[in-house]
Amino acid sequence: MTKAIFYFIAANLLFLPLLSISEGPFQNFAFYITVPFIIIFGIPHGAIDNVLFKRSKKISNFKFIAVYLSIIALNIGLWLVTPVFAYVLFLLISAYHFGQSEFTHYLKKQTFYHKILFFSWGLILIVGLIYFNLAEINLMTQKYESFASFELVHSKQMLEIIFVGSLAITLIILAQLVYKNIISIETVLMEIIVMSLTLLSFYLMPLLIGFSLYFIILHSYKVMEEEFKYLKSENIISNLKGFLKLLTPFSVLSFAGILFLFALIYFNIISLSYGYIMLIIISSITLPHVFVMDQFYNLLFKSGFFRNS
Image (cartoon, rainbow, N blue to C red; front, side):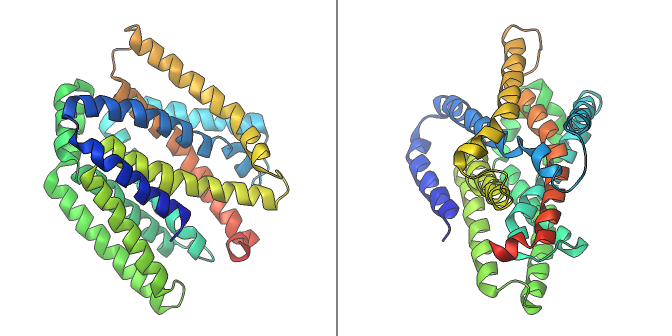
């Protein structure tokens, strides 16, 4: 059992007693305790995208930031013009990203076949999160007009079909990887246990708590650990202090931007909910980040990082 899995189980056990708190106070508690952690851990794990991308591509910092911000701006534009499409796009790229971060360290390269596994595995997670929290999500769409347009995406029957289809594809690909001796049966069983624990957490916990525990412990922590080890192996940093120093500039800028947007909502300059703005922010940051991480994992494969680590 890895440290991340142990922390994940421990965190779920710590939150279980809080489920007895009445829904209203717990909802408020969930928002105020999870959103800061999502911001604190989620943003820094993408705050060195410029450093990672420049290891595989020759590009100036200015050009990288300009392209990165342009993609963010385009995504925000999508949210303004066609929010349902932007929301679905966010779910799909998140599914791929979650699956990719889960399996790359078992592989020697990432083929199209492997990318189907990343996508199907991630879809199980995303669909499970939505499906097991449909009641809470439906309340949200009724309470906040900005979320109402997503109701069609949350069709129970459609979610069930996608879940079963993704599960079938995932199991078939994993079985073939075991047959070809690319992944061991022990590894597959451990990943199935991790998936089962994650889905159980989604079922037991409110939406924000369940997602936060997965995102922070099983995703962001793992990705940041890979980033740290790679940068250390390349002598870009020598210790944790150097890593934190690299993370700080863009993390601080991002935090300031989020606080600025929250201030605009607080003073009624923007008439959207905090949750909806957070969704737009996270999806807009995620879009360019996924492309950078795809390049980063290709770099790790070429350098033999996973074989040596």
